[in-house]
Length: 320
Image 1 (spheres, rainbow, N blue to C red):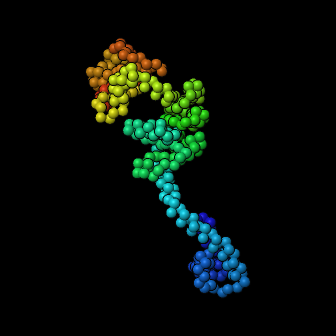
Image 2: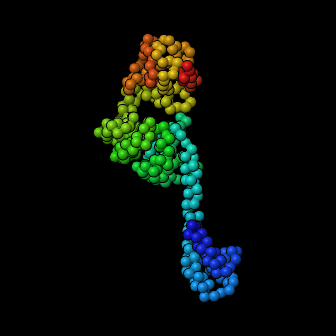
Image 3: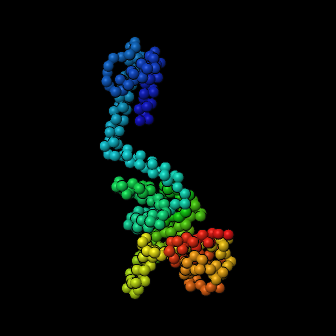
């Protein structure tokens, strides 16, 4: 299209230089490159004929090629795909504090489904083109290599709050973790490890959490044999949207009401109805904390309760 526009401009300018008015020059250019062949406009001389010959040789082939490409794009649906990707990119450019998901296989699709159910906005990256079903049109999806820095920036990695690496290749997960940490130092990174030996390496290059699907799957299957009811209850609490109670994490900050107070002074159970099951402090869980336990900034409360109770707890923590 750009070359065709240059041909039109050049042809119009050339005929105008040969003495035609701008409208006549444009008319003569169009009928020449389209090979319609009506009649020449203006006085036909030697320079006029030479210019027309070169315009036919270059302009006609350009116009025919452009027309064939446009027809091919429309018939193959590529034009619609380009518009759809542009619209999606504009949506991604407006995002902030979203989750970037690398790898959209079986594991990646399950991750996206769970995050979307929890109200998160997810931008997925995969090298494969998805189908164009209505459900896929609602996804925020980039086609490309997650190891490409430009693709990661297109996904808004510098504005994201979390990155999930669900690729099959441990090497790619290592490389992306290292790159992502340099792009966004505050990013929370969860990486997949297929080999146990890769877990410490991922943590060393900047992954906040490392998950081994094989180990988790094996442990879950063993737990279903040993404690099937307990596992089922936890599944229902974490994943069943119709269940009454939930598990939630609440962070104690420097400005929090509960900072430097004991659990007895906080009276969480009395004022909110939620139950504190554990406190995460400096990477270690303190389960079933006593009422004399003093909460400090950066502590994370793991609580059980209804959505209303957990929301009341979050409001209490934020108040000052």
